[in-house]
Amino acid sequence: MKIWFWPIVIGVVSTVGLLSGLLYDGLGDVVSWLALLVPVAFSALYGWGGNNAADDRRA
Image (cartoon, rainbow, N blue to C red):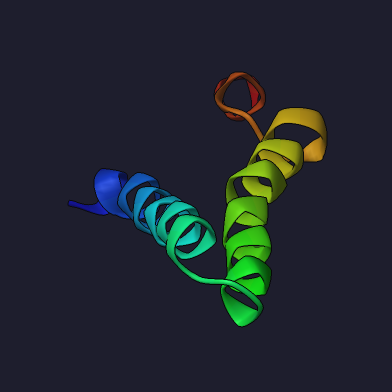
């Protein structure tokens, strides 16, 4: 379960963001933008500057 925690969290947050953007105006648009920034932030954090598995194996 430990390995699936963050992918499930990102999926749920993305789903909430997509639904709030489609169904609500005003505050829903703000929630949508913030929720859809989460996967982008994780990608930037771990893709560009974060730790990756190849670095951990060499140490």
